[in-house]
Length: 263
Ligand code: 4AZ
View 1 (cartoon, rainbow, N blue to C red):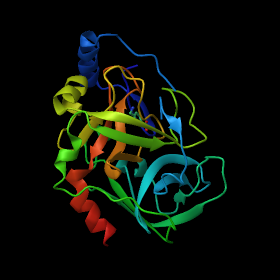
View 2: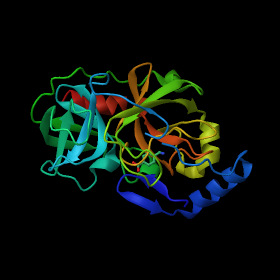
View 3: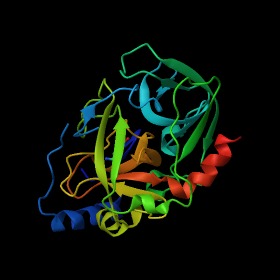
């Protein structure tokens, strides 16, 4: 129950986190919000979000999201790429539905995983894919390292993905989106204890839960003011009261990403 969720690693019980989680639960107004149907969002399309990429296996089965930041560069989560090779993954653009066959499929010529990455709960959860062929879609811009003010608590952020619509539920065939407020470092630390690394992460979600990213949304964008500011990374379950989603704080990694985008 107290497993931290990130793609391909389920129910990893970490004692320190469980303790922090129990503490947060005790102080929450209601114990646990019922998991809602991205959880609590609405359907959308890749026409609306043309930079929204599916990261798939070689059979085009989606397992993570990514954001197109140039014609041949996709920002995603490091934890999505662990164990993957340039042969094992594809990037699919312009495909709103998981069961679609439309859009553009690109092979990957390089996978850059932040060399400091070890585990999502330690931070550094960023990767950049180089595509073998260009994507004919509008790209997203991403935050520069100086734009640290974008994460001010309560700022509206947009999450997008094909992930499960409830904790332990099924993925959404159609792309979904929702908005969630950013959460202060102090509050997120109260939820997650030392697993929350404020320099590398930012939390977003409602105190009462109900709206969140979930399994399969990892690697996808957290947009603030329409600009890529975070990467879906991890969280305690999905949409639970007192446990906001945790996103990679992209300002911290912006220069590293730019080096890759320009390489
Ligand atoms: C996942 O497993 C995952 N509620 C992504 C986001 C969150 C939890 C799990 C945040 O990909």
